[in-house]
Length: 287
Ligand code: A3P
Picture 1 (tube, helix red, strand yellow):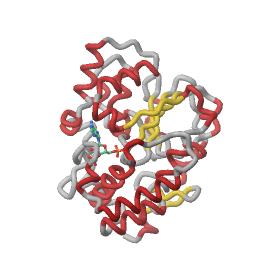
Picture 2 (picture 1 turned 135 degrees about the horizontal axis):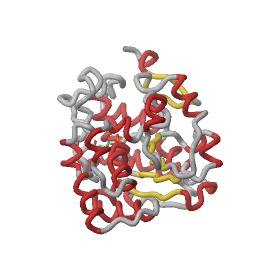
Picture 3 (picture 1 turned 45 degrees about the horizontal axis):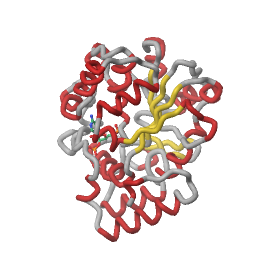
Picture 4 (picture 1 turned 120 degrees about the vertical axis):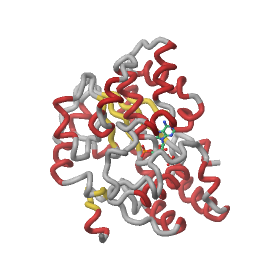
């Protein structure tokens, strides 16, 4: 398949046709956010599916029913993808969604609502590595080519949802105030119960230590990899082929060290650091 057949462009962003269409994007633009909605925002491969597991558990006091009976894409649907229109009326309240949209593409109702946002950041080198393997296993994405070729595309933003730096910068918007928390994939890897506690406090859920531990166990890499409602084993092989690379691939921080040469690392960090210059946040893991 040619790239024209695989992707559509929306406000300059490249999106896969398999999961996005003009109707789903219109639905997203006209979507009415409610004040008690929760949206997890991620650049692709930063930890989206992880949040689709954590949020229902936190919002429902650790009740396992949603994660054991509803596929992740219908349980916490993507704002911009095709499934939302089908499941929106069945979402439990408070509703939880995910999105890869940059801030400026959120619908008008998002800006006037009090919906809460959890922005998940991840080391961009690890994002790129994860994405590189994902492009090998996902039949609806272009072959990534060599690691060098893919790095060039990644740095130029010729990848899904554009440049990583534009995405993270867009979600630093002043308008968001205390409606948003920033959480990193790395802190979730390091201490998942602590990250879940942060999320639960932000969402005004008063979860006991025992419930937090239970949620953390069910959201571990190993448990999620075995959960058929989350591991994409329900998706036909032609779309996602775990034999080429499993969706739950490594689940660690720092796998970039096994992939980047020192030249690639120098080029990558120089471009990214320049694009983040003047931003009032630092990414310690870029050093
Ligand atoms: P790797 O490819 O580095 O293993 P997304 O959901 O945004 O597409 O991100 C996918 C990445 O998140 C993959 O990274 C996947 O393994 C990782 N991931 C998903 N659930 C995880 C968990 N419970 N613990 C650690 N990593 C997880």
